[in-house]
Image (cartoon, rainbow, N blue to C red; front, side):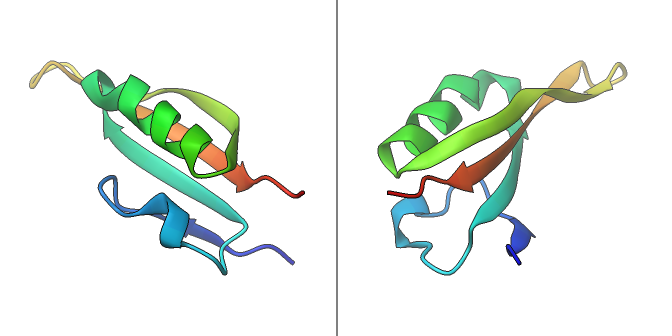
Length: 71
């Protein structure tokens, strides 16, 4: 059974060993940084895209679900 957790945006993704699947949310402007970091740390992106639009603040939250690549 895989563990599923919400990971803070700025954590060290390589140091996460016991988690097999995770969810990350962050500002849309950090999208490429998030995806690049996941790839370098050995994670496969399952789904990604905008999550919530707050029209009052004009902020879009980018949402990613990723699984650890098995070798």
